[in-house]
Amino acid sequence: MSLKSDDIIKVVNGDERAFDRFMGHYSSRLYYYAYGLLGHKEAAEEVVSDVFFEVWKNRKTLTDITSMNAWLQTITYRKSISYLRKEAGQNILSFDDISEFFLAPIQTPDEAMISREEMNKINEAIQRLPPKCKHVFFLAKMEGLPYKDIATLLNISVKTINNHIASALTIIARNLNIKK
Image (cartoon, rainbow, N blue to C red; front, side, top):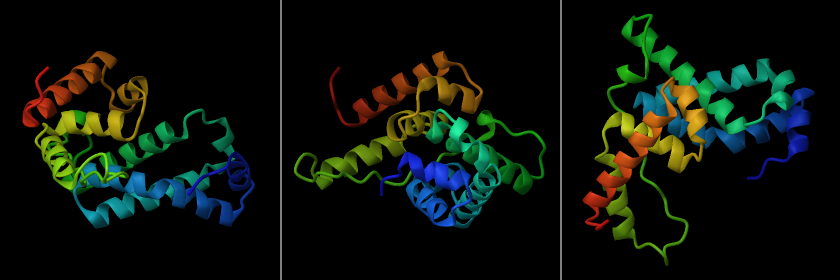
């Protein structure tokens, strides 16, 4: 499903059908991201619902946003951290406190290029990544967020992002027996 720029303007003006299209466009990726952070289906659904409620409340500012993906990921991350804080009964929780990042298996769009067995090997290699590394890898390589946006989102440096990505690629290559 494609989202048109005039759909954003319609959302800003309160068009609920345009907002439904907006949610349809972004809900799946936000759900998988929240699930990656939380590890529970119901919690991820609750967080994504809260994200879209936040978007609706702030719809008048949508046209000012330069990167909708980064903005939505940031809201999802913050809502997920708030959820974890509430569950843990803590006030302080950060990127370093996330002990696991759950990643749903990647689906390949072209079976002719990558066999199911190869795709399973890639997914297994990704699952073996350390949690923080897997989280950064997901945001950078699967969600396509710029490193700068990831650094801001996770409150870590771009150099740390580079280190996580380099480490992820090395671990994945090693697990797939790819020689560098």
